[in-house]
Amino acid sequence: MKPLVIASNLYNEVDQLEEWYKFVYQIADGGILIVDTGSTDGTIEFFSDKKDKNGSKVIVIIDDIIRREGYGPARNHLRRESSKWFPRAEWMMYLDADERIDEEEFHGLRFLKDYLISDYDVVALPRIDWKDKEKTEMAKSWVINPDWQARMTRLNSPLRYIRRLHEQLENYSKIYAELSTPKINHFHRSSVDKRDRIGKLCAKLHMEDKEYGDTYPEHHKESHYREMYLKEGL
Image (tube, rainbow, N blue to C red; front, side, top):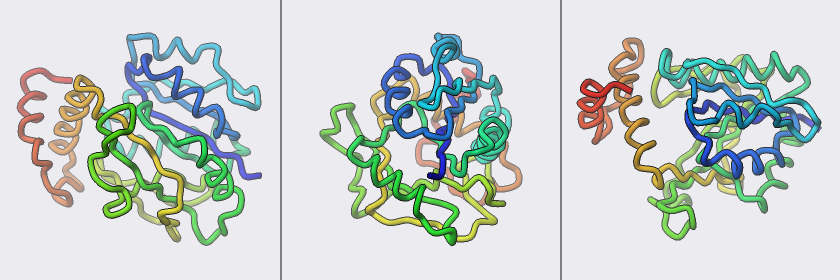
C-alpha cells in the first residue's frame, strides 16, 4: 500500500465540511492536512477533534499563503507539509471543499496510487464543473473537453508548481492522464459569494505575478473582478 495524503487550502468553508470530511476520510489513508487562510466561521474549530482512519489527528496550519504568494507556491507548501507531518505517505492530492470524487470510483483511485508504475509521478484527473449540487447539468462535457487537474503527485518527486495563478508543473517525469481516471466533481458554481471572492483573488494574483503573469491570458471577466478588488479588497 502506498499511503495518500489529502490536503486542502481552506477559507470559511464550514457549511461544506461535514460532507467533505466524510468523503475525504474514506480515501486519505496517509493523512489529512489543512492549511487555513484564517477562517472566522468555525472552519478551524471543525477539525479540532477530527482524525483520519488511521487515528492520526487532522493537521491544521494557519497561513494565508494563497493570498500572499498565489496558487503555485501554495501547492508546493502543501507537498512540503504533507511530507513533514506524514513521512510514510507516498502521494498527496489536494482537493477544495467544493470538490468530491464519487464513491464508486474509490477503487480506481486506490489502484492508481498502489500500482501505477514509477515512470509516472503525477496523476491528472478530469474535473466536471456542475451548475448544481444535484449534478443535473454540467458546464461542458468532460469527455469532449476534459478539464485536466494535475492534483495527485508523488511526494518523493522533485516536481514543483509554478505561477501564482493557473499553476503548472515543472521538473516532473510523466503525467498519467486517462479518461478512465476518477473524476473530480466541482460545485463552485452553486455559490455566488464564493465565486466573487475567488474572482477578486484571481484578479489580484494576476496583477502581482511579475514573473509569469504574461504567460496566460486575461480571463473574460477579469477586468470586472479587478475593479471589484480595487474597490472592495478581499
